[in-house]
Length: 179
Image (cartoon, rainbow, N blue to C red):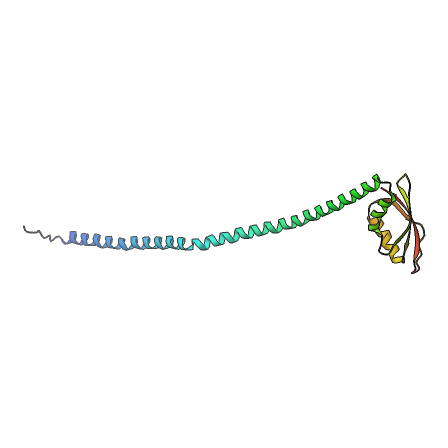
């Protein structure tokens, strides 16, 4: 069989042009697919860095919360310490109230007397008032004694009747009323 040759130049020209346009479209498709593949590979490749960034942000948030909670924790510890001190003072007060034994009260007062203070006498009456005679070594010890008794919160009132400002031993008569 013989092949038919066409001598229609216009038709051949259109066929050639359609073939060229089809070839031009193929590189565009491959370029678009190549770019898309590059973007996908880039996203997958950058995932570990993105995950690390997210973890760092989360860690920063957790550290901030820890700092806030540590401040609260120190305040709670301080409150618990103060509660323990209050409870101890209440126990001492209860023991003093329940006991009319001057020895017990003297043992409790020993904690509030400055070093080197000598107790000469103690008298306890039924209305929770007491008179104590103590000997201290100087005016500094008088000031310490007054401050310790004031800060003890064990007494409603206390009175130091006579104080000398000379730097010598002195005997003080204290009138105290137990809370």
